[in-house]
Length: 335
Ligand code: NAD
Ligand code: DAU
Image 1 (cartoon, rainbow, N blue to C red):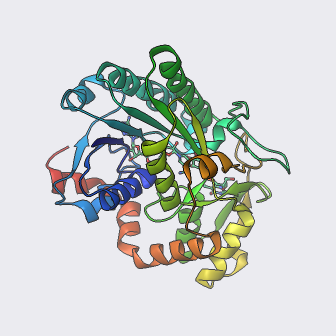
Image 2 (tube, protein in one colour):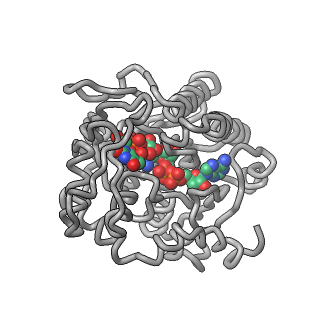
């Protein structure tokens, strides 16, 4: 089995590469990443020297960089590569459309041309828009993306669907809720708040802090994608989530308690534009049809995650200083 993982130097993609290398030591894994600010090869130290895992610096929007990899043979594509941060999409939407929409289409086209056996698009619950106080997103919930980020992911999802309907490409789409765990870039809520609290800096909570997210430990997302690759019915969408709804203030207070820091560090700031109020996933389909069960409960998972950031101070220092961006040059030669 030859698996092409895109975005495998990012938060979820790197966790996925490590997970798959451990689960399937015989699989050949080609990890393709453009190494934007969010790509960090230090995440992949555990597979350095593993002859089954190869890193290739390439951009998913550039067909000429990808084609040789497809020519060499690919069985499965798992597309994690994306611009992923909502706040950045509000400031600079263009690159989101380019990477998330055009990049996905480039991969789909090559997958069609070279007869890939499965294309898994790693999408997000944000394509469904926002919920009120009750209800859950199911796979039938209409797409109603509200941010440039989620609109670009929804556009990609529709292209994936179109390549299945029009060309018969064997595809699946997964739509997962918010992930947390090791190697998350500290622009996202949990690592940002941990970092600020450790430095006694203010913790910027948007709006009233009562927006709700449905948190899932990253390894449970990886196991869901693994199942979809192996058992997913072509053309189907699978929602992924652990039914761990928490509002942002609850998350931030847990971090402060764990780190022994005062709540006075919380600072309410201007709300995010178009800020979705609540996400919550109904994951019954993947549970019942593919037998997925998440292993981590939120209360212990969040504590383990805080502990990971405390134990991996150097990783965070390298990210904050930008030193992680030199890692490619030292390990793999000049960029
Ligand atoms: P991330 O920002 O940490 O990582 C994205 C990776 O993609 C980086 O390594 C980056 O270098 C790479 N990349 C960006 N543009 C590229 C390009 N043009 N060509 C090749 N590589 C490129 O993101 P993440 O949080 O790990 O999210 C991964 C995927 O999962 C995304 O598709 C995202 O939409 C989806 N997702 C994320 C979450 C979450 O909670 N973080 C939840 C559901 C779905
Ligand atoms: O739901 C899945 C999505 O989760 C993924 O598709 C995205 O790639 C991922 O970034 C994440 O999006 P969110 O916008 O939910 O995550 P973020 O960590 O940016 O914010 C989580 C919540 O915390 C959100 O309600 C905004 C709030 N927030 C965030 C930051 C960075 C704050 O209050 N203060 C902050 O400084």
